Length: 204
Image 1 (cartoon, helix red, strand yellow):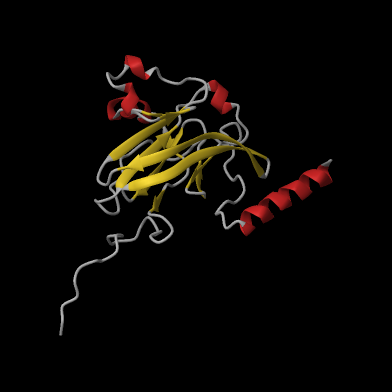
Image 2: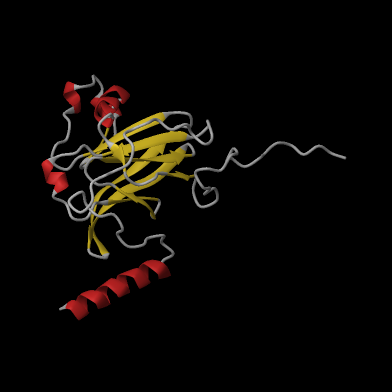
């Protein structure tokens, strides 16, 4: 049985590599193994003010603290971070449309897609997404226009006021990243604008 499991694991990783998908193996343990220990939430300035900031957080609860492996999040087939109970992370994105989804890990495999949603962001704006499998919010009780907020399974886009009330008790566990697509990936600390320079070149 163990040998069969290992063979399937290796085969899965090999096929992912052949397809050119940037997908590794699950790396984030659940809060049962290691609770988030980073700093509590602090807003982050965008590396480039023309980009959008996206915060994704997960309120802590007993069910989440019994989890051995945390779900892993992806954007455009690129693995970005795991999200354990009581943690948050972030993405800095160029304005545009992306495929955003999370998958459930089991040992070294990803076995189930938890949600899959097109994520459309506008440069210069800030977005907040709440992830909770067992305690979702009833947006109809919080906002007059719930249809304007993205909802996909346990993932809910929430207003800033709602997010900030919960985020004050939530800790950073895995660093977020800047993602501008295949052509524009840069480290988070890069001290320059990340859009291509399209200024005209002066003729000699």
